[in-house]
Amino acid sequence: MAERIAIVGVGQTHHKSKRPDVTTAEMCAEAVERCLEDAQMSMKDIDNIIMGSFEVADGYYSPDKWIIPELGAVGKSGLEMQNVGTTGGVVAATGFNIAATGLFDAVLCLAWQKMDEAAGAFGRGGGGTNEYWTGQFPMSPITNFARRAYAYMDRSGCTEEHFAMVRVKQDQCAMKNEYAQLKLGLTLEQVMNDALLAWPIRRLHMCPTTAGAAACIVCPEEKAKKVTNKPVWVEDWFTCHQGGSLTMAEDPTSSTLAYASHLVYKRNGITNPPKDIQAWEVYEPASPAELRWIEEVGLCEDYTAWKLFEQNKVGIDKEIPFNPSGGVTATNPIGATPVVRLVEAVLQVRGDAGEHQIPGTINRALATGYGGQGENVIMLLRKTL
Amino acid sequence: MTTEQKQDPEFIQFRYPRDVTYHHALGYQSKFANGLKQGRILATKCPVDGRCTIPPRIVCPMHHVRQTEWVDQGQRGRLISAFKINFPMFNSRTGELQTWENPIIAVELEGGARMDGWCMETDTSKLKTGMLLEAVWRPEEERQGRADDIMYWKPIEE
Image (cartoon, rainbow over all chains, first blue to last red):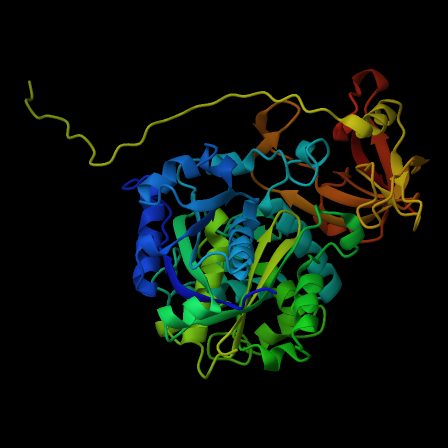
């Protein structure tokens, strides 16, 4: 029988485009220090560490050999893993799995990316869903989301102006988040006139390259209750991979988000997502994707989310409180990005999100990780058991 | 002559250039690559639901059964999606940065499989989902079993 588990502490760096002042390991130590402080724990309380980044974008392999000593964590049990954009998601999900065994008291989940050191590695392609085939096309997150955005416009009837509305909303949220990287004070006109990368995707639509790290500590129920009076319960989690299989992507706008989120809803008795979940931190690598993701998690009918932006219904204090942190288009330390979503969701449930706190009680929050051609990790949190 | 000394930066970054060439095996997909050299588009077919897949897979991703049947997908298909790149990206054939004039598209072939390719029409406003397209191949002697053995997909009047 699995143990019930809770997140007892979270921490992240102030995300920036460049961090020449620290090594990757030092940057990780920053996030871990903040996480331990938040949990009021020390490294001696941690007995398992799950960690990871997107190794190609870091430029070295087996980073745990370097980072663990810098964290003062030599001799502890743990795993290092990588899964491109979903890395932080599989780090967290694996940490949840391990904590749920009840074999460990406190599992530290750490993810990072220092994209100022090898951002170009990403643009070189390779890998993806099939090394032989997709590796031959000039594919990148930009082109991936250009394809999705074109197909979305074609099917929904929305225009480029709606994509700009999404970007402005994301920026308005980021402006309130002290940890966010891009805080630009954008107008619709600025977004509409920004440099075109791959039609209809403009530079401002895309997530930036970021240096940053994020961490959380997960404990089984008994330990969690001893450590904190504000545990955030991990109700469920699910990692869904598909490798771009067209059998799961009949519609080029779609990802596995609808499949994965509704699977989690079903096994947790969630029948009305807009009512049952009060905070959403959903990994949107590009502004137009947020429209489709809002639909896929069940907040409105397919191809209608753009109307919610037209009606000004999406925002921190609006009907649809979606991505109150400012989201991935403001901050994207890629391997860590799903943990940044998780950290925000935890803060929202605790009521600790400060200026970007969603009004009212947050009983449930949903955070996700996204990667590749539509992989998703779902993390469902609860205030009370 | 100035005696002013150049100040060292407080934090230093080292540069580590790396140039690695990989040699990846195509395995089961070799039949598909050889088909391209012959001007044919071959896909694997799932014995359970009949779905054809490109790139070919030895096992159906949904039904977990061996896919031993190969189906010629024909030379025509319909447009599913398109995008155009406005910045230089790497060409895996040359390893160099390149600008891409032709939109990258996804096509649903007559045989039911879907594949990526480049479109001959460069004006994206003229690309409509569902439009009919036909493969335009490189001369046979230039084909290498690669995606750009099909140079373009040409729009066909209906």
